[in-house]
Image 1 (cartoon, one colour):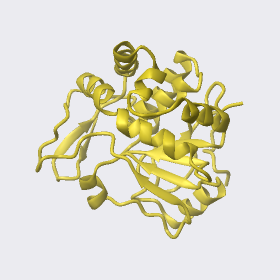
Image 2 (cartoon, one colour; image 1 turned 90 degrees about the vertical axis):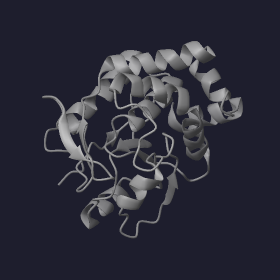
Image 3 (tube, one colour; image 1 turned 45 degrees about the vertical axis):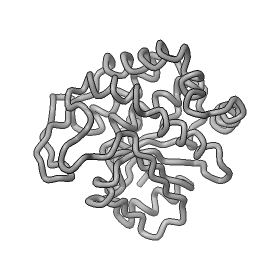
Length: 236
């Protein structure tokens, strides 16, 4: 079986045990270098071999420590670099310090995700880290914003970025609305479909506060040389 779904038009990869996995290449970004997905905590041995066949060299996990403790990635002996770069602040007890409202969450991430995204860029430009897979729990919010910032930085058109972002609704079965799930503390919550408005508002927030995506990243220590290295590695 091909690594891709039986539908040739589908953007999703057929990796057993991994949800919402696809190539993040749009516009000038070269295919086969940056992938995005949900967590690997249910990755099967067959799925691990398919990741190996893709040439994945590193995995960046954007989840927090409590999530990692409950649902650690299953790598089945894959020889790759695994890095944890939480997008959101850690919980205080059982309470989430971030908003439950999706629109507010994206604006919150625009304010707080800078250090994590900067660290992702440094990781991607380090030797032998590509191809890389970036993931969070289901690959739609934390991964969605992180990958969108990278795609914008690398010159992808806003319409293409938004279209790729919205694919998570199909990848997670959210086309008909929210779906309940049990979080890492045992609480029942709703997984909500992503919207273009949430993403565009977050990107607008970070650009207006800093002037540009490059300036946003520069405020978190990313150098011009690192941006040049990222573009050389992932585009062209």
